[in-house]
Amino acid sequence: MFRLVANFPCTCPTALYRRWAGDIRTSEQLAVGEAGRTRNLLGKKFRAVARTGFRKPPSPPRPPPSPPKPPAKPRLPPRKPRAPQKPPALPPSPPRRPPSPPRTRNGVRLTRGAGRIGRLEVSFKQEYYPAQWGYTENGGWAPLCDDGSVGPDEAIFFCQQLGFKTGRQYYAAGISDFGADEVITPSPVGGLLCDGFPPEIPVGMIAFQNDDDPTCFLFRSDCSEGVLVALQCSNANFTTPSRPPPPRAAGPPPRAPPPPDMPDAIKVLDLEPNLVDAGGMRAGNGRVEVLVNTSAGEPVWAPLCATAEDLALFNPPEWGSDYIPDPVANTSCNQEDPRTNTWNTEVIGFIRQPVPIPNDTLPVNSEANLFNPAKYTHWVTVVGGKNESKYALQAMDLQVSTTPCATGYMYSLICQYLTMYG
Image 1 (cartoon, rainbow, N blue to C red):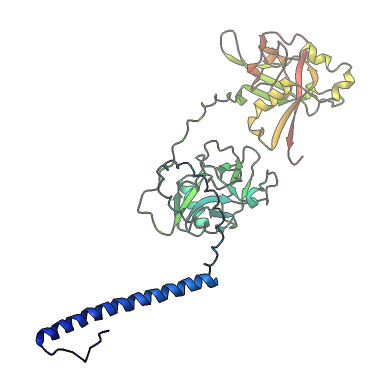
Image 2: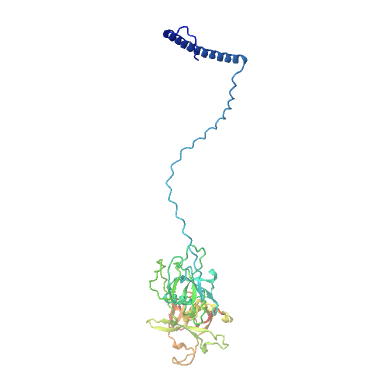
């Protein structure tokens, strides 16, 4: 940018300085001029470009506008605060193990328990005793009601039938009573009887298998308290006390005692020979004597008289062979032998044709086997109607007199014993 001038007209220092300074200013001016020329040239070029139509290339097109945003979802109302939750429940307990299979032997088994503990059930047999109700529920296995007929001795006996040495009664829920899981409950039996004759038709006879085992009957039972017989068997003596039985609900009031049997206050006698007619039509019939009190209060035997209604039953006389049920006859037969009235035996009394009182008089102390009216100081007649049987003739309306029967006839009957075998 600086140009040096080689030809200086003056060589003195002052002149040299001035020239050098002038050259410097000239160099600066030259530099300024060069810059101006450069600007002028650039301006000309730009103007030339403008005149020739060349332009700056256009900017790229703008991208299309974005689609409008969908409207915002409405905000849900604020949730209510949650109630405090209970802690999670514990997992259910594992199911109980199924009960052990019943231990069965000699018609006896323990069930609903484990090992040596369980509810006592028995099966029945029909041998030697056909008159039984039978038991078909629960496969023929009947639970026993704890009605007091099974005690300590019976508990030991049943455990011995199962092969143990000893045993005792056991009480636990679901064993000595029906459990909640038992949808169908078999009917209990009760009244264990291992000695004596059954007073009614039994459900069955326990199917013991040994010849020396007792004959034990069981009967129908409503088992109102719902307690069943359960056993705990063992081969060793127990060292701990047994569980106490559950509390029992108050039972119904005791029944009134049955009327007393009065077999010693009546006689049913065969007809003496002088009371049987020539044709023997009255053979097998009997007459009745009743123990009554005299006016002085002393007991005496009095023949039973026939009433006019009794005579009318056999008019005409050919009806004398009929067997007519009658409350007086039925009461007399059952009072004379009350033990015959059991579940499989029944005695029924029938009135027979009345017997005339003989007119032949015999000595009072005569030993002849004949009916002697002179031996009797009192006679008795049933009055007031005969609507139903009683436990004794003394419970009926009786009329006692010191003269023979007003009709002249004594009451006659026959007792028939009916059994299940015919």
